[in-house]
Every structure is written in C-alpha cells, then in structure tokens.
Image (cartoon, rainbow, N blue to C red; front, side):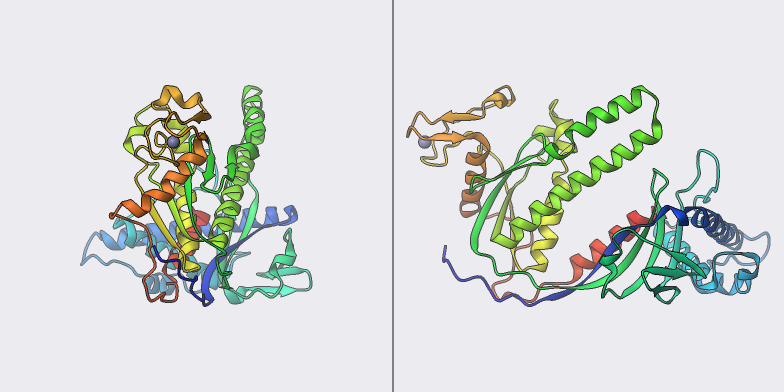
Length: 392
Ligand SMILES: [Zn+2]
C-alpha cells in the first residue's frame, strides 16, 4: 500500500437544512395557519380524486399546475396563508401523489387523535429578515439561536411541528464546505453493541452515555402518565444521540483519509437477543453520515466483513480471542500466542483496519484514483431526505 499524500480537496456546494426552533409566541398563529394549509391539501386531494375518477368523461391526472389554476383566488378565503404557500402545497401534493401512484392520499386532519402534525411550506421570497426577527405573511417571528441565520441566504423552506407540539423553521441553504486535509492515513472502526464505537487508534465513543439517564426519566414519566413529558424526553434522547454521532463522524472524516467500517448489520447478530441493541444503536445513521461526509471531503469509506475480527489477535493474527455472545462480558484479554494484552473493541477495530488489505471485495464510496471533485449527489439526497422527514 503506497502512502501517497492526501489529495488537495476543493470545496463543494451542498444543500443543507437549517433547523431553528421558533419562540412560542408564534405557535397560536402557526397552529391556525396549519389548519388553512390542511384545507388546501384536502381540497387538492378531493379535487384530484374526483378528476381521476369522474362520473362522466375521460379521467384526468391533475398536475401541480392544474391545481394552481383551480386554487387561484383562494387566498381571499384564508386569513393567514398566501398564494405562494398554496402553490407550494399543490406542488408537494402532486409530487407525493406521483410518488405513491395513488388517486387519493391521506387527509390532513386538523383535530382529533389522527391530527396531522402542523406543516406550513413557503417560497424563499415569503420569508424576510427584519432586524432580529423574521417576517412571514405579515407576521413577525423570532427564533432561538438567531445568530445562525447571519449571512445565510435560503432557497425555500417550511415551518413544521413536532410530536411535542413545538414549531421549527426549516430552511434549505446552500453551504460551501472546505474540508481540511486529513492528517492520518486510515482508521478502522468497530461498531460494537450498546452504542460503543472503538477506533483502531484506541479512541472510544459511548453514544449511549449522553442519554442513558434520560431513559430512566422516560420510564418514570410513562409510569406517572405524563405523556407530553415522555415525548419531550424521547425527543431529547434522539437529538443527543444524533448529535454525538454527528460529532464523532465529523471528527473521523476530518482526521482520516481512509475509513474502514465493519459490516455490523450481519444477520448473525440480528437473529440473537442482541437484536434490539444492535438495531437501536443507530449504526445505520453513523454509516450514512460517514459515507456522505466522506464523499464531500474526498475520503474513502470501505465496508468489510467483521468475521473473526473479535477473535483474532491484531499482533500475531492467531484466533486466541474470546468467541460467542456469552463471552461479550470479556472486555480485555491476553493473547496466548504472543502474550499481548488487548482491549476487545480496539483489537477488533485494528483487525477491521487490517481486513481491507486482505479482502478484494469492497463496497462503499471508494474515491477514484484521479480524485475527482466530490459529487453533490449525496448532499442533495441528504437535503431531500431531511426535507421529507421535516414534512412527515
Ligand atoms: Zn497474539
């Protein structure tokens, strides 16, 4: 393996979603506006379904453009939303309907137990800055952490409500990334059970550490029947984990040129009683983050088989390590072949790092030898996915 210097990395433009929490004084207005949005959506749903299955005449599949014509002038029936938002709803409706290929989508209910979480899309020009606040549809909005908006120009966005009932501002913004040149050549990562990652350089991340005490609070809140409190805690736990994984993947991508990850999603583990902790651990999230961040920064990610990575000694390669799930309790062991002492996870990470040199079958986003500028595809995909989850 030649140790060539890391390539010069050009910056790349990516679409990211900037998500800011709104101050509660706007909630009442947004809740009312969301009801109006639901009426537009339901009108589009009903009209499209009727057009697709008419009593007489040929069926017609209404496009966003058709819906725009049918809703022209509808703003006078609404107090809060304008024609631009109505057109955004029509466009979103037409896209979704095309995706699922159905004549009718689910209604957006405004009350009851099946109430749709609030959603209010808009075009870039509708949201304006005014001093420290934002203006939308004649109403002033203030957000937490408003300094994050400094120097940002957005393309479009939406207001969304989460399960707790809080409202968020989501803006699609273009950012230019200038990733640093990696200082180190490569690293192996062992994705363990229970939210632990070990690197072949001996570092560890315990993502669960950030929210373990929250889990107890959730259980307590549920026992007492405090539903809202439980939802709030769930949200906090999810965000802490996501944050920990983001920080970790950013650190790895900034430091290393080649990143080698074990294929943890092997059916072997999912079948066992460890399944829950494996699936919960968010390794899919971490791998996805490593992959798109690597692609943006011209790094390579390799996914290799985890076979024997725990058993083999990373010094002498003898299979002297602990085996089987019952031996999970063994955290450190001494190799009977060479006498070396190993941390179980770090040893596995070292073997994973080594595995990439033996195994010819690789998957992941290996960079081409010419080090082409990173593709924007993963950024767009990420932005689209986050926009969809924000909407859903
Ligand atoms: Zn050994």
